[in-house]
Length: 323
Image 1 (cartoon, rainbow, N blue to C red):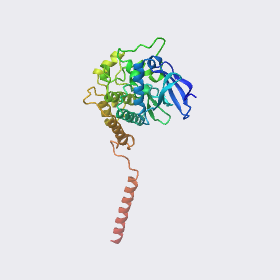
Image 2: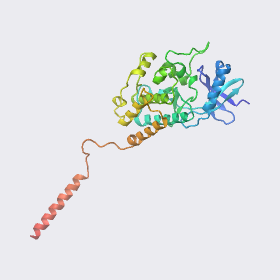
Image 3: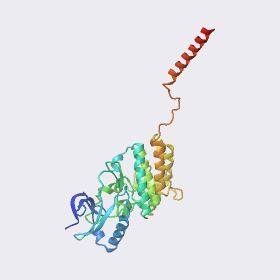
Image 4: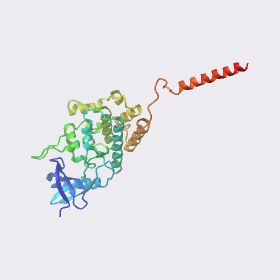
């Protein structure tokens, strides 16, 4: 009996292969089942590299990372069985408008936690963008395909380095459509220059996503990928608070630190970023509103004054009556 039963297609002709919703016949759970392309599975070197990446990815377990449950062969083809995550891509939730402050910080904190877990296993995501994040009905973010950066459009479709698909193959992978449309938008400066990037590149990408969630805009955008890359290398974006007054100063500072071009001074620890975002929640989201610049009205004050005046008048009248 086959271990996995295909239920329906999710996306066809992705960079790694066709993706289906399937059922694990042994456990009964639903999985995102990737049938790896022949160009990869049939090439001994690429096959070995993919299996090595799969073994590392399977070791990562975190509530905000879509798990790789299993990989292997079935009916002569190579497969990857990921956690199936129903929900909406973050890119669909954005649609050119900011999210509510509390929700934006909530999602960014979850993604920072996910990055910290991946980095703890020596894995750098390198393809973090809104299309690679699914938000479920409980407002929980899940980061997809951690450990497979080099196999996706987000890495292969860099500035001027587009990988040509095999004969008859088209890039139509819904999970990575955003990367194909604008691969430069979420790259760190070092990636624009042709380097793979490490944890700091992931934090830069998270900074761009957080900026977008707060303002409805990306901090670096040009008419072409090359123009966008030049802005990433040379432009200083406006502070989020100038576009959305609800953004508190300490969150402005954190975003700017995440988007610093210099690797020496940019935030380098995703766990620290998550901790800073938790502080934002405590200091801003859950705190009462700050004091008004003008004195607040005190409805109890007038009755108290009236009662005091009446008592004083009564005391004077009593004293005069005794005199």
